[in-house]
Image (cartoon, rainbow, N blue to C red):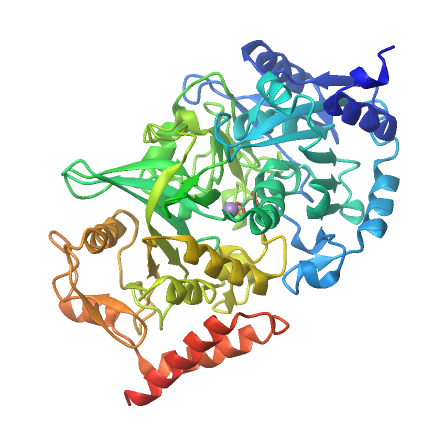
Length: 596
Ligand code: SAT
Ligand code: MN
């Protein structure tokens, strides 16, 4: 028996969890090759809910890759069961579901009590951020899911180094997770930002169960960032190298289904340019003493939507999935092509293969009209497999940011691109972004859902205060990054997309670089700064000048309606919208009325 003074906070946490959850065995993950193999072997022999946890896929096509099929009731994040449990309701804000922390803990402890009887508890010590960075954070998650344990190995930096970093400090994130009986009636994801803790029960799905992802690196981290003077954002990070050798780094935030991952791995269409990938989902952002913005990706992998990914839409991701390093690659809820034991999903190939097993594990009937892969089927793959990974990925300082891109899916109103006048106008514009829902996601097509900074489901505190925090960050910046708004999704009267999108989007990125480097002029208008007639290089693109004019124009009537809708949206935030943003909104309104 160790003397109580010799027990480290890490060991103490394990002991508490063992007492609460009563596992048969405890497996402390230390990282390394052998352990990865050991866990993958174990997963191929284990069953959850009558399903084998992992099945080996064709290693000649996708090396070191496995298939996982989840319970059909557990295929996506469950925002209606996700709570932020701050001391007061107003700290969580109208953007979060709230529960009193005492009540929430009581509820969760009842669920956790004895939940791992007959199971193994995996203890995952992990670091978010490159370990040598002052921004990196120490974390520990316990889980009874091998699938979650293996996924955490891919998505974060796990193992001995994390235990060493934690040392004798009590200051680490605690993640409590059990899949329970995978029962939607007993499923909760509870965040305790004031205690650096998340309790998650009843789901094995990515955003609910890989607690380093949305739960810690966005909800808890955004709360910490507010206190400590930095930002945790739902953003991609890319570097764009120009022919002169200079690399400009961008952040980008888009609501879901706007092609965020494709943009993070884009291949430029112009010779001499190259895009370096640093992240496709989360960015931690700080401001140096000299007033320069820096960002790093706290994760170490991609958890991407499979359907729609193909060598046409995202060849770099297809290569990433076929590369090998010692991390396994997981495919979850895709279909399986039985002819060669490879994963398959809608639009991976032009033709649907004949001999598919669907994501339910049934023989797929092509005539059913249903997809073979679940629309939210996923791949989990190490970022170190990515051929376009930036050499700066592990730079402890992060990368210096010169531009921030915000976008949404809007059939009209928002032009293809414009630049915001200054930081404050950019924060205003970002606070209003949104997407029209697609038929696939809701059944009701075209409803506009505002999603400020694409953070609505992920901001761990009152969103009105979050906007103030963005404005505060701006005050620390010597030369704020330029903020650009984009909309790749404008439609004409016949409902056809006006802009080709995908790789052609690089033309717009190039204009942004030209603006940053002060090589391009801009035209000032009611909403900001737009490209001049020849500002966007259209060489080799078959697009009519009238279409370009339309794509970049501002329809004042539509913008007047937009302003009314923003006023209504702002009214939902309990009078917490900063005065600066209200002022920008009323000035915009005045400009639109003046120019009649
Ligand atoms: O929320 S998840 O992390 O599971 C997926 C996503 O929406 O990015
Ligand atoms: Mn995301």
